[in-house]
Image 1 (cartoon, rainbow, N blue to C red):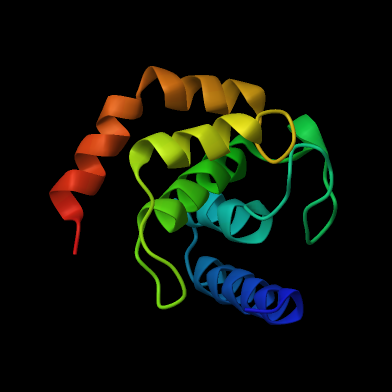
Image 2 (cartoon, one colour; image 1 turned 30 degrees about the vertical axis):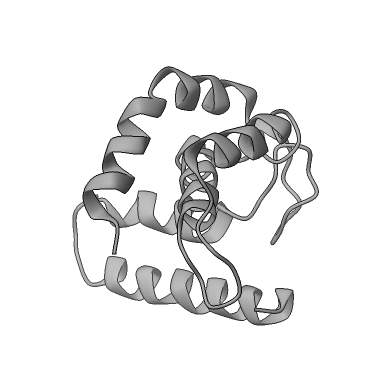
Length: 125
């Protein structure tokens, strides 16, 4: 998917969540869902989109989702690629520590990697 198409999808997703949130009169998970939707393509080093946020400017929920999203993409079979092993996926994530990913989020991933493996093994298609 091209970056411009990804950006349009991101804008539509955020607008949809904002519309849903406007229909309720209490704080809900939708406020966090909006942050995740809007910012999970930001990168720790500022090279992401849509706003080019850097480091802790990126909401923590989006930093966590960025790593989870990439891990899922690496571990999943796609029409254009085979699924990668946990070890290969892990090495890619480690190589992006401090670039794509918040170093603390990578550290948390490494501390809980067995749970990531278990989830993939339990829910493989």
